[in-house]
Amino acid sequence: MSLGTRNALLALAITVAIIGTIVAAINQLDRQRIAELDAIQSQLATDTLSVETQFALLENAPCADLTVGTDLTSEVSSLGDRLGVAESRLGSDNPEVLRLKKQYTLLQIRDYILAQRIADTCDIEPVTALYFYSNEAGACESCDRASYALSYLRQTYPQLRVYSFDYNLDLGALKTLIAVEKVEERFPAFVIEGERSYGFTDVESFQALFPKELYATTTATTTATKKK
Amino acid sequence: MSLEILAYPFLFLGLYFEVFMLLTFLSGPAKERRLRLAGGSTPKVAIIVPCWNEQDTIDGTVRSLLAMDYPKDKLQIILINDGSTDNTKTVMDSYLANPQITVVHKENGGKHTAINMGIEIAKDAEFVGCLDADSFVAPDALREMVPCFDKPEVAAATPAMSVFQPKNLLEQMQNAEYIIGIAARHALSAVNGIYVTPGPFSFYRRSVIEELGGFRHAHQAEDMEMALRIQRAGYEIENAPRSRVYTKVPRSVPKLIKQRTRWTTGFLRNVMTDYRDLVGNPKYGILGLMVLPLGFVAIVGGAFLFLVAIISLVVNLVRTYDLTIGIPLSYTLLPRFNFEWFYVPVTFLVLTSMVVGILSVTLVLIGRNVSNTPAKVILGIIAYTFIYAFIAPFWLMRSMYDVLTGKRRAWR
Image 1: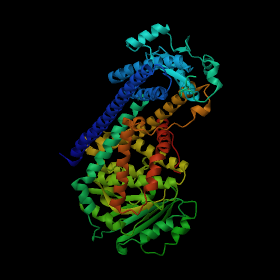
Image 2: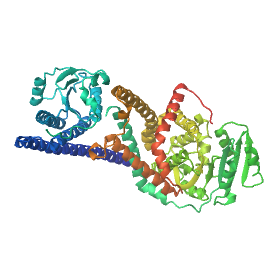
Image 3: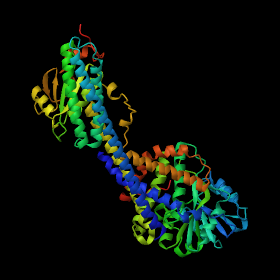
Image 4: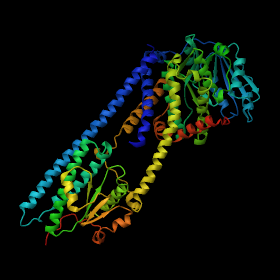
């Protein structure tokens, strides 16, 4: 075998090995991402349970210290960002992503319920938006725009709590939430302060769906407001 | 992912070629070439300097030739003025009294006619070399070159070419590229895969030139055509990795694009017409099966990927506009960096490009060290990494356009 032929074959083997190593490294990184998501999710589940328990224990003064609960909301939101990255990298139909997404959805629902309870009991009035989207092809052409507008609003008005749900996710609790809120299969769908609306045309019209109090101040009110 | 996937085959081939070159560099035959000592043998040699409007550089070129460490009675320097319209004639005539130098003035007929006239004059030379009149040789360049011809089947040999006193960023960038060329030619010579004998200081066995015929116009790529003709005839092309020659390069982007368009169209036209039979032909080994096909891939792929990148950019811009319409720019344009490892965009494209980049830098360092070229390459590597990819597609596309439409351009 000539030097050229030998080196050509050897180079092919080495190149394939390099490519294989790169693919394996990326897979390993993705596995670590999933593991990190898993760990965060477990921690948040524990934290949620802890706040719920704390809330139940402090029957006489349930609003005495709600810092943990409000921190939880921002952590859930941060977890959502990470899950979004994992979803875009691994695909929305990846089994691991789906499993984590279901857990995340459950966390969101629990956080939403907890926030509602705290709001009712402790005289806090956070502005809450439930956002339902669909990943199915052609089902929601303006969902990306709606998501971006919600990200902007959430960052600009920190007192706004946004909970995003994949409408088609096969999860009993989500189906119950959809039934309770009477959300139809039209996307994007929003439940803002209990009012349902569908579709997204432009940011201006979208902003009009939120109560005026949201725009009255831009300072964060998600930190605890103690009951008088 | 999306359009990114289109880059994968080209990245794979680029990586493959680099690995091949590194392997060949490490092989025994390449090592033997590196260990080859500058010879004590001093056969009769003629160096032809074809010249057209080179009044500013010809004097320096001739001085560098005269300063070479080689017996004066064995070295003939032939200056051919190919109908220059500037002061080249006067500069050349100042050497008329030097017995080592022959000065010829002729009507303009193209570089190949000037070289052929020089070959005719150098009747008693065993080897003839060419040196562009904007290039300058190191004192030991010829002594490093001569041992390449120890084997009778070697018909030509190439030097280690780098940029003469690179100053601006564009010259630094080209220097890094030329030094990669040193490594590439050195490695490819071990598998007889060289497809061009560049104008600055390539040498030929005169008897082979006589056998194969003189230089041709060859679509303004006479050096490439001669190399391919030599390969087709079954001879070998060697490389002298320490035979250093420094050449002037374009100092502006339009001039660089013009020069590279000439080179690229020369490659395409020669390989697609007269030397088509070499491409993919196992008879020509690495040259036919790898170097020439990958040359095509590099040209077509470079232009294609650039177009894909432009389309992708436009699509993303339109999408971003659509996504952000109505949102204040202060939010949209706010830079968002997240340094947590979770968000680091480690993708196949990024990692593979990094490996290709590291191997390219390795080749630059190999080229510099093998040739002992006194070059500071850091700036050149940076420029090569970040500028080259934005300029090269223009000459690649222009070349393909010229070849497809039959458009011919002037040399300068």
